[in-house]
Length: 222
Image 1 (cartoon, rainbow, N blue to C red):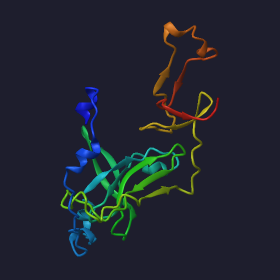
Image 2 (cartoon, rainbow, N blue to C red):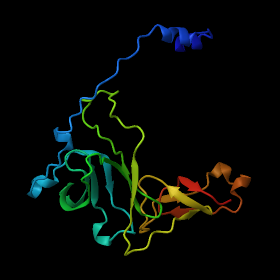
Image 3 (cartoon, rainbow, N blue to C red):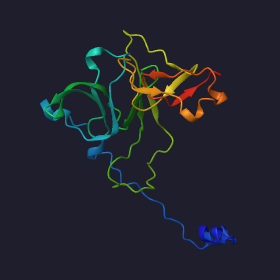
C-alpha cells in the first residue's frame, strides 16, 4: 500500500487483508504462583539491591526537606514493588549511594512504578503502570492479560513545607522543562536579543535578563 501510494497508484486494502490469515488466540502463560507475584524481602544491603525500571529522579525541589536534596529516587517493579530513596555522596571522581528509606512500598502485585517527575509547584508525581505482566517478553505480546486501560497517577507532597508558586515567564505561568531547579541559587540562562532583530516590533519593551531555569513551556497570560 505504501509503495503504491508513493507512485500515485490505487490499492485495495480490504482485498489484500482478505488474503491474510487470522492470528490464533493466545492463551496466557502467566502462573499466579510464579516468582513475579511473590514479594521477596532480604535483609541488610541485599534488601536494597533492586532491579530498576525506567523510573529514576533526583530530588531537586524546595518543597521537600533540605537534607534530602540531591537524593536519588529509584522505581522498581520486580520483586520489590515501590520507590527506594538513596543518599548520593561524592566518591573521588564519581559517586556512591547509601539507602536512606523505602519511600513507597506496595503489597499490590500489579503495582508498577515506572516514572516520576517534579511538577511546577515542586510536588512529586509518580506513574503506576499497574500491569500484571512484566518481564523480558516471556509473555506473548498478545497475551490476554496485558492491560492497556488501567493505570494510576500518585502525587506526593510534604505537608510541613509550602508548595512552590510556579514562576512567571513573560507574564505567563511556567509549566515545565526537564531538569528544572527551583532553588534560585544562581542564573543558568542568559536571554538576549539577536542583533539583527533589535527593531522587530514583537520585541517592543523587551529587556534582556537572566533566568534561573531553562525557558521552554509556558501557559496562559497575554
